[in-house]
Length: 419
Ligand SMILES: Cc1cc2nc3c(=O)[nH]c(=O)nc-3n(C[C@H](O)[C@H](O)[C@H](O)COP(=O)(O)OP(=O)(O)OC[C@H]3O[C@@H](n4cnc5c(N)ncnc54)[C@H](O)[C@@H]3O)c2cc1C
Image 1 (cartoon, rainbow, N blue to C red):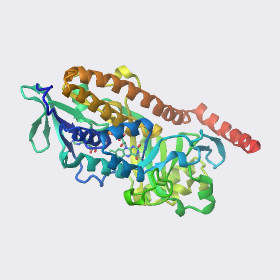
Image 2: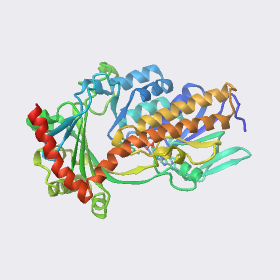
Image 3: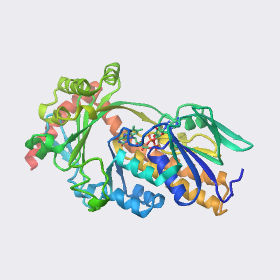
């Protein structure tokens, strides 16, 4: 199958974060690669902020050129320049504080900015407006993908980087690789100056989480790639966020009622979200970040999750078709680790393919080694992300709701007395 050829040809299905990161690395190391993505415009994609921990950043440095990596740092906001995360109750009372972030290497970046930078690195290997409809196993000329226009393409290796509803992973696993996690999310962007001064002070330069009774939660992330840039180099900056901004995410257990919200958009969606929180007796102060948001920025997300058991991930024998990222370990954004894991998958796969090219191992051994680490990585991020999902879902039981309603004011009082 030509696994030890000098120019191993790779088809990547999906040019999201993981697929573009892999294409960038393959191109940098002179592999022949083509990426098909169904989108017509890299920038016309959804998404808010993406967190990249130290390991994801190390992986990126292996995948993209140093000058591009500098542009990425100049467009990212540093967690170490933020105050520690905090926890509030639904009335805006402080319940607790997270760890000090002073030595945290993690960075936050707009998903669109990250995707644009990675698309730059992937260059002309990225073919937009191409939907893959079918994947076929190895025949004489290797495995193949068929596009919506009926054209078939073959390669030595096919990598499914086509996200949570992956065609490639479904082909390999013989069915879906994840299921709805039980939560529905709605996100939007609110520039900090849009808030009252008192609310700007309360929220501060930090991220926070509020979990109320009856399964209502509000995450508010802080992003400032200008005032708190990782690398102070304005000439390299390409962030789409141009000042301190709160990225909020409202989360509710999935039900016919919350599913109905997904049919709404803009002002109607914003008002329906506010109505829902008010019905759970959240105060206006806490809801200001939603009330003052740009209604056009609100989008709905259904959280999908794969199993957190490593043995359930990538449940197929290693071969010339594999997958990475959400296609294998679809991860709710509650731990902020899904994109970082996809990038680490890409770096690991690149390392294995370089070993194949150096004739250190065969393609099937390399893919087997890659899939072993992929399972461990996926299990780690899923375990973390599902903790928050389970916590929110627990508040929607009679006992959980009562406990949240009783315990949170006590915690708030203790906190106030202590300070
Ligand atoms: C629109 C969108 C918004 C997101 N917003 C956030 C966010 O705000 N915060 C956060 O933490 N995470 C967000 N995520 C999730 C996060 O980007 C992923 O968890 C993470 O990047 C994993 O990357 P991935 O490459 O596996 O998948 P993704 O980044 O989801 O990329 C999958 C890609 O595959 C393409 N694709 C799918 N099917 C096909 C097909 N049949 N043929 C061709 N192309 C196909 C899609 O167009 C997409 O570009 C978002 C994902 C998407 C798709």
